[in-house]
Length: 544
Image 1 (cartoon, one colour):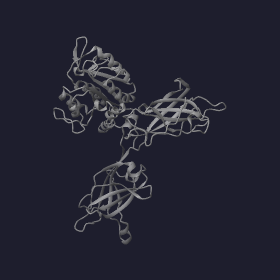
Image 2 (cartoon, one colour):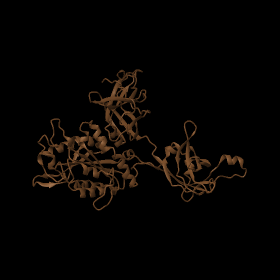
Image 3 (cartoon, helix red, strand yellow):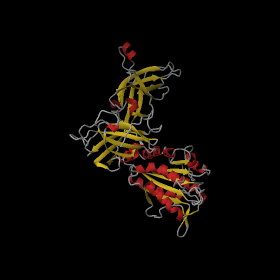
């Protein structure tokens, strides 16, 4: 197999918005022995697919004379949930000092998506040769870890008997927090609000990332300065002190920490100077601000369900003008939408078995209208194996149903909501449900659908609606609560925005990846928002 190094494009590989960085640790087992007098000297090369080409991102060090290497060098990759990020791990036996990979013996490779790795946290797979056959007994193990300090610190501060700075009043105190910069100068990291006309202020509790306050080092000295606010910007200095997060964490609600606020100039001038007041740390708590990837690495599964519109407004599927007509390329807008979203979501479901439901059609043998039927015609087992299984079941069911109506969403929304409600009984961040509805027109049961969505907003569930065709989708925009809070017909408000709507026509001439980015961009935030609201940490999270 010939390998060449394609230079990576300038800047980070991937989209502009990165969820986070992921560290990948690589181990090899039972690698092929290419050396005659000793064992192989393996190294691993990471490639990412960019615009259809494999681009080299990084290499590990060489493990000398070792068929079971555990590489010390880690790969750091930007992680984007809404993209299919294809990776290839290729191992070589170093024979020369050349950077050209064709100069080294090929030991095998493994390809997958970054989503597959992070959803499993650790995977072990067989290495393959260029002909697709196993590379002997060679295996590769890849472990993922999020690279971020997600700790946040919440401080509750007060003051007592601060110096009076205003001529006809007291003081208007506020605090500034500083940490040492790389240049040795103090760098401002937080400023409290101003408390007017008092020498005994109580500031509102505030929360900042621990990395911002002290670079994540609780023993690092930080400086706190107290000022009297002046509207002209010439704030009067009251005093300062230095401490550390570790010291402030000694404060508890019943036992606050008191620190003297010192004005160095006054301290030098006045022999009897004691302090310029006391700053009180009422409480100091460090917690973790969990990310989407924390929940995925913790074992949360994304449970994917598809709802497909089979109403008569779609047109006869045998007619080329129908939205359900499968063209000679084997696709249509419904299939394109299923592939775009499903190929990303399926990496986050371990068994990759997805319910696929239809609505708005008459079913054999009695030709009654159904708004909640399994497209594989097996109501006790509506699951399809992967996205390919959904596509096969969809194609197979088309000749056997009659398109009818109306366009009712609420039965399918309530169907998935019942399973999401069952998941809440586990009281753990183990499952989150995603319903993809693909439709061509106006919702007939808007009141019932609004009510169903408002109830679903209390559950671990999100709804993605993709509108196909050229209909007026104003009602769909109404469900997508980006601009206003959704209310049910009873007046009850949605707890959170769980609906994301996009019209397929906006992406007809765009690269296929852009549709997935548009509909999945809000999903990580919705997952985190729900579990935070329920005070549910990731299953395998460590204490702060």
